Length: 373
Length: 125
Image 1 (tube, each protein chain N blue to C red):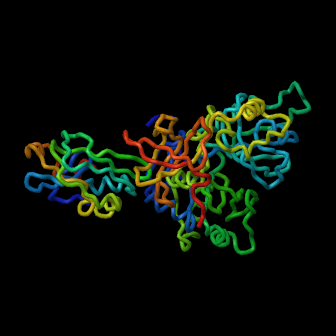
Image 2 (cartoon, rainbow over the protein chains, first blue to last red):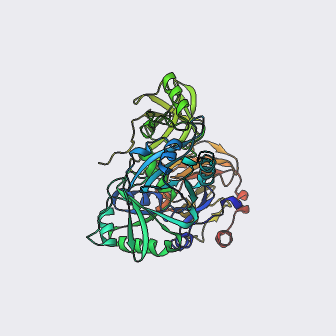
Image 3 (spheres, chains in turn yellow, purple):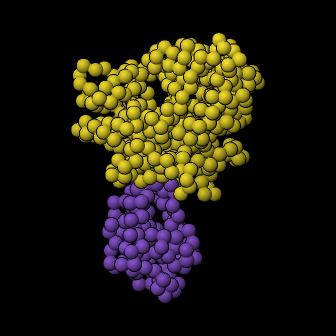
């Protein structure tokens, strides 16, 4: 195993104790599953599951001009972000290529928490630092940027039983933050930021707190969730859950080769803002008409599970490859996503996926692929 | 980990049961535990011939596709159609209902290179 893939989270020993299978992911050694991806996936859909997301990065930007500056660095509108609220957003390069997708939380009026992808922490930090308002313009040189990734542990606790679990942990008096909101809580002396956000399509929360307290917090949540059927969940279930919702995975569905509009995520890009990195390119693309689009699909009949890089065919012609693919544990058929060019792909269009030399029928769908019954 | 004494084993975690001039083949308990959640099995066609160590079937979990190899040169006489509707039989009963195919082998002495239970146990630690 390469040295680049040797970082471990503060919960690594807990994962081993629980019998997790460990894989390298974005430079980290992470649990891919504990017992079964299927069972972990269904625990999140039907009860509650907990993921270690301590590998994800936490950047903190603060100062009187932090919000104004971030609004020029990110695609969503920071001006509309109230204190105690988060928004999904993109960090783009000058050509509107996606450096990262992240959630920006306004934790204080002049303080912002950026939760970024594990494999992008250094790139994001360097990019942002290089674009900090310079001392040449003292009026705006009032932004402090810190990479606090190593100081934070992170957990995602997701599933319909989150309300009951939250009550068990904090008592009936405390209320869950509203959707996309973030607030501070105390759990046995540990100060936690808790956000009502997630990557599974289920109700749930994400917790960010000092790394030193990772194991006791993890174990306290497992203990309190036992009667609710909580399961520790690995990256395997995290991937199947997010793909059923058509949430993109950075490095697979998103990359500097793609921009958010063609990824179908224009909702998180505010083109009415006067200026942000990548805006000009996005306006040009929009005016010209998008040349490709990321679309979800499902397999029509019985087939092997579709997987990333399998080839897509339209009218018998090679038309690209999958960026994501799996068997959907909720739906019990194959699902995936791919970028398709012209003609513009539409829901209902029949396509084929090549698996080991054989073509299997599939159909383009609308987002999300999975809807709660 | 269950490693029955009366079977032979390959390096690639297939088990082999001799049945006259044929062999019945599946994947070991250890292999199914490593794969977990078998969700699809691509079976060989009856009548097709395979070289020793040739890819003869594919067992897929949620996370990965794994090739299954012919333990010896031979011709497929049976494939376990039950796996098409219930691939999880490989997880629940790897040495029984979870068998994958039966191969009529050209040369029984080709099995001499396989491991016995003790050697396989050592190999998987």
